[in-house]
Length: 150
Image (cartoon, rainbow, N blue to C red; front, side, top):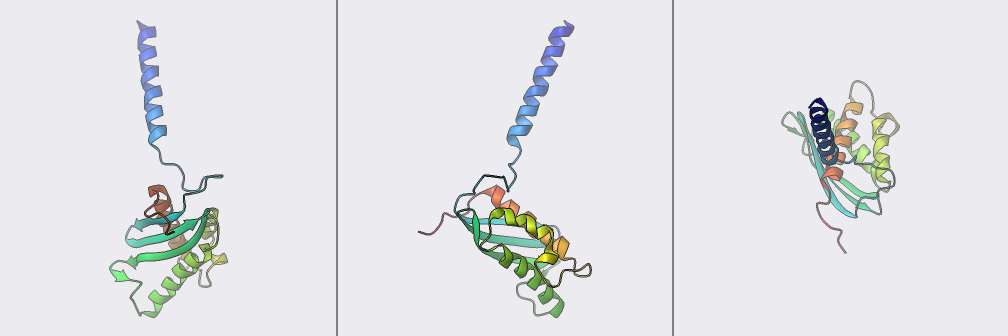
């Protein structure tokens, strides 16, 4: 009786482990994997709002643009405020850096001081870069938004 109970518990644990592993999303950047060509969209909201749209061809970014960029109700894409423009410039520098590079270059954004001029603790570029990384990873994990234009 104890052996039968132990066997049932073991089978249940194995089944639950299989379900968890099978339902876990694959990492967005997987060595050797090339994402299909086309357009992707992803986002990050908390309380910053970042929505990106990017295009991949042969595993490389050909375009990275913002569909939305803001924080606590301030639309960074429309603002004329000097401080906001500096932050927007940092985001644009990060996006421009990716164009022409392999998807694995996304990891370079963890070191924004190597990419954008105004990366310092006051402007918190490191925090912004990680939010952009999350938005792009979201797009990669969601999959193609649109097939490439022929």
